[in-house]
Image (cartoon, rainbow, N blue to C red; front, side, top):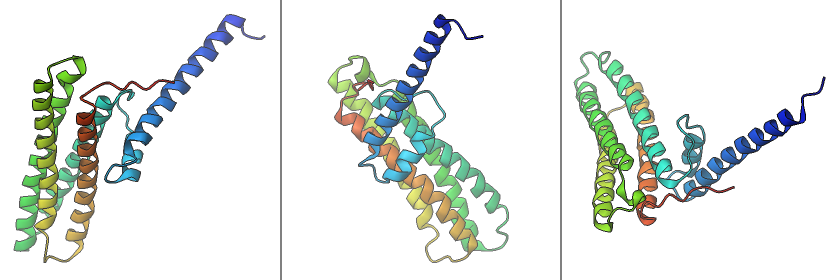
Length: 200
């Protein structure tokens, strides 16, 4: 028995909405990632973002920062495990201790960045001066997080072995997604926090 016309019409509408939202999300991700520091990584991480649907540049910047936080937290857990297995290798131990501290600072700074972006007044018509102050804070925190990521890597200069290879792999990924997040924040600054809602 064929479904009534009303149900068929509703199914078509729902499908159209899903396709429009998905396409819009992909459009803003691809167009925004074109000039990012690491475009392919930018598209891959934001396209698979499992949070709320991205419809404007502020949401995109927030998603990028959340992705950075997630990668940093994962790296922090791996570093903590490796730190306990180093034994008496003093140089590696010292580098790992510093790196754990750096990645902890990075997570804190990225969390502060996200907090600023969530309360960005430029989107709701705040003053230009207030918006600039908020953006300056977000950019400062994100830049500090990126610096911490690279400082961790610098600590392993002159050290060879499997641990260095693993740490370099983890921290390079964190640094790259953080660099992309900073780019998204800077793009938001250029648009003065305007929503730039994606339209079908």
